[in-house]
Image 1 (cartoon, rainbow, N blue to C red):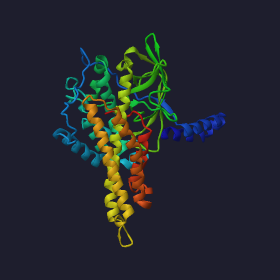
Image 2: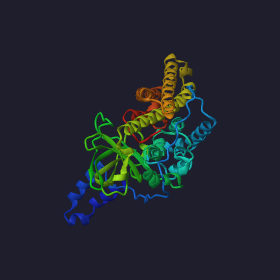
Image 3: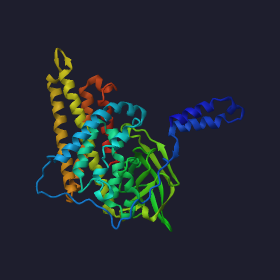
Image 4: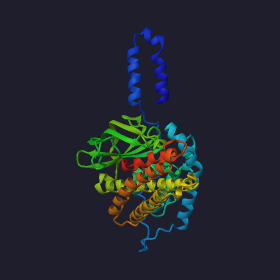
Length: 431
């Protein structure tokens, strides 16, 4: 968008335009572009095609129910978390400020993230992945570890796995054969789960995007908001109201006619390069409907997405805690560390207490989902805690740094902006 505006600005000032009598129209175009952003065609997507024939969909089995609520990570989980934590500290954290300023992840960072094999964990072995059973807890731990580095970049990294996870859980054999092979190769496609819309008090179960049946399949019309890596994404899973009967999920390739992208920078999550997905008379085949349009499938997608945001909030909240503790211990006022002041010490303690509660509730919900147990109540609690306490922790972090909390020299102001997103985001990630 920046290059487009720059070129049009130079064009508006040229003498050729003035002689042709086109200065006013071009100036209007520049003004509109500055105000609303430019819409461009979707990313030049690859051609998705079946690499193998499947007799039936491949699913991950539910995890074993041990009868105990034990949050101790297994050896495999511990190894995964340590690897992802190291990656987040060495790759995401140093790149976060630049990504926030430039509204995009640094070149090569997301390909390095793909090398971690995050998408492979949720894909069955028979489809080229390494998954043997449903791994919602593992996914929550990975999201938490990534968000400790940076929440915006964590969303950018996890966006493709949201699509692959949905395909594994709800896709039919043809959809899995067409799309999942791309997610286990070396060049994992950018992809996004697009549920959110730019509507006050948005309800994901009442999308304004419409889908209607046609003789050849479906037609979609609407606009999706805050879609991560929208300009680069080659595949979207989009929610739409199916002929007034309720929300359903559709597979939309960026190459479909009628798909355009518009940049949509937000207050937070700027490293995720969020954008608007415009759908104008997008024609889809009958096989684009995911999960048979079942209401319970859509409900589970919303719940697992909200659980993902709770895990991300826990990771960023932990980053705030880990940053403010040494700061208040080292920062001196009136001849002693500010942590000696009771109000400061209590504020830090409150962060730790609320963080622990959020983490426990989110992991309990993940454990129940993983074992195939009812988990709606636990997700609702995790969502509420992540929304309220996450924002509270971000605000407290800024306050504890005083004037330093307000400047970009310290990352706490960015974490505060990112944590504000947890209460308004829908989709984008999926555990």
